[in-house]
Length: 122
Ligand SMILES: [Zn+2]
Ligand SMILES: [Zn+2]
Image (cartoon, rainbow, N blue to C red; front, side):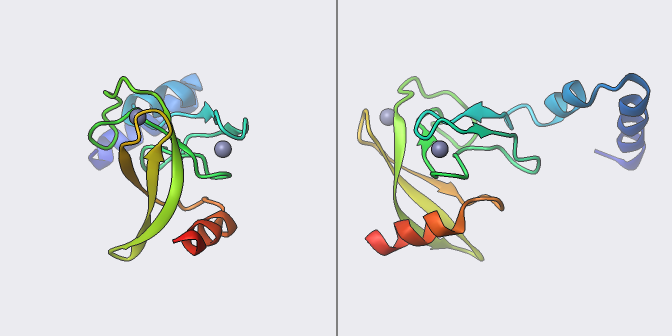
C-alpha cells in the first residue's frame, strides 16, 4: 500500500467509521474466532493471519499452505512442541483428526507460559 492509499483509507475510516470493513479488505485472512479447545474469544491479530489461540495455543486444521484456508479436515491441531525458527519460534502441531503434523509461527500475544510448558514436553 502506498502512502496516498494509506491516508485515503485513514480518512475514509474517520468519515464513515468503517474500521471493520477496511480491516477486512486488507487483511482478509486475519479473523477473530472462538477457540474450539478452551472456548475463549480470540481477536484478530492485526499484523498477520491469526492461526492459533493465544491462550491454549491450539489451532485448527484449515490451511494446506499457510493462510490459504483450503483444508477440509477442520480437526483441532494440538500443540506438541516448540521449534526454533530464524529469530522466532514455531509451534509444532498434530491434528487430532487426521494426525498430520503442522507448524505455526508464534504470535506476539501468545501465552509465554504455555509455550514454555509445551517446549518442556519434548
Ligand atoms: Zn484456546
Ligand atoms: Zn487434520
